[in-house]
Image (cartoon, rainbow, N blue to C red; front, side):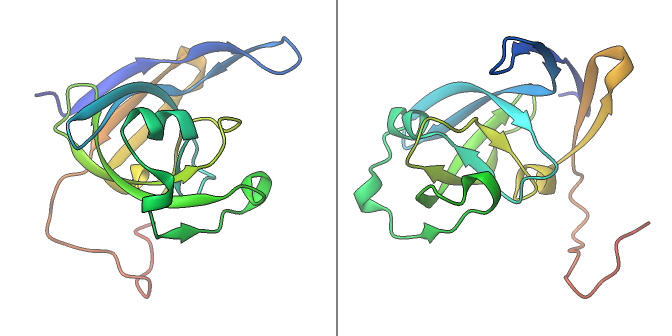
Length: 152
């Protein structure tokens, strides 16, 4: 299994028809025997991973059975969300458990944010080369607590 993997930026079109090149990552999510493939936007500004409604439904999630209500911020603050835990496979890496804010809307992208995509993976963006590198965090047994200073 590779320690790091490279992925190309993906060409998309914004709401005005302009071409954008974005760091979007193919990902396979699974929950209780069901799997769905998606392409998640790497978003270092997102506090949490965000799952659109239809992808959660395709995973077999049932909105009314979930009790962890989440409050989102920013342009997603108006949306209802529930906390869900699913397995995720990125590239050739081993599956990881990921927490998502499952939104009751499909007007949101699949977002990979700080909680907990960037807690599981390091990412280096190479904009001029139109690619990015993903590396799985090594398990060192150390945990960064809120009172500790970041290592920079």
